[in-house]
Length: 252
Ligand code: PGA
Image (cartoon, rainbow, N blue to C red; front, side, top):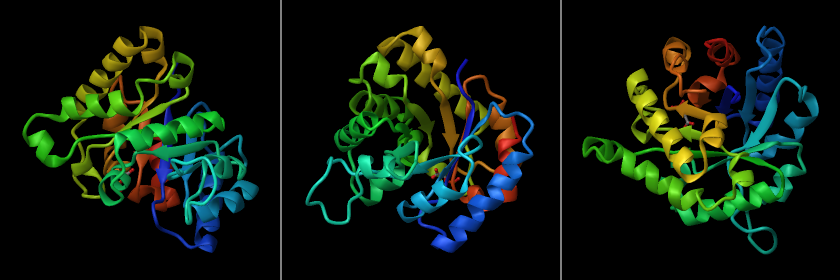
């Protein structure tokens, strides 16, 4: 059975003090959660990782970085390596977020290097894919996602790929308030699972967690998560408020 997960992506928000407070608030809520089988992840800025790691119960919440360097170590000013992230107690790393792709010109080849470095360190990548609005208007969304997966992930071995979490995030839905319809999400998630099955096998495809991201909030999480191939969400804006985030976790 694949794992259901709700992951928060705080992006470039929260000072260290605010971040610690938010993590504590989220933990208080998650303690009350009845269904402990749902994985809860918070993706904090780099500087929060080790502090948040010290104060949270890792049995309830796991921590993710939002990015990692495509180089293992050395003279790369300002970069943070997968090994450094691992040393904070984080277990996951978000790779390939559309904001990294568009604002920092990261391509699939760069992401592929990051994924491999993360896996070498025992970190689980949350790999983001998704099309731009123009691409959807031209009905190219499936080709775009196929290319992102092919170039970013599909050279991994079976064992490596089994550690990947996928996040389908249509770029036109991120931070815009416009959400993919449950049908659009299901259609794409089903397509992604089919690609995984073709490139690996049915068992691996069946076990792959595929999250939906893009203006997922308490009011729409339930109808999105009700889809058979939607295994949870990657939550931006709504993960910055403990109550909203918890309501999303409770939407299954
Ligand atoms: P959003 O962001 O929920 O604010 O749309 C999602 C994401 O970028 O992961």
